[in-house]
Length: 182
Image (cartoon, rainbow, N blue to C red; front, top):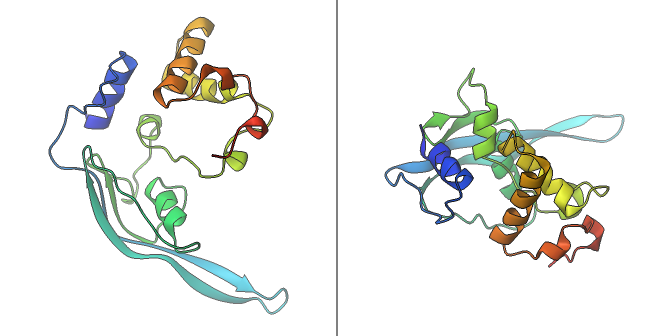
């Protein structure tokens, strides 16, 4: 069992200490990552050119460490993050998450792997369904991560999730457009 799975199990059991059992090694290693995008200019001429959105990026993040990626708009920060979680294809490089090379040929990303590594998008208006309340949106994740819970237990998990990130229970029935952007 890998560290992400062990930590996930602890959280499911109610342990919120934030301490990962495994300390040695790296949780994430990115090596030589390249993401090139093609862009067309002109409607009829169709000139195509390549944008090197991520060009030979390498870094390591150990267990318990935090990494911030800083750059101006359009510098490839989001493309880098999307490539790491395989939402945008990389043309080359290694993405080793908790000992598994996510970018190796033939690697199939399982539901359990997706549970442990997820992307949080930066625009809440594009990330959240405008027809769903905050509670309904969080409940979708609860159903995936805690299968078999009844309605009462799901509601409890939603409240615990809000509490864990410091949000008041009063926002549960609000819609995304009713939330502050701050």
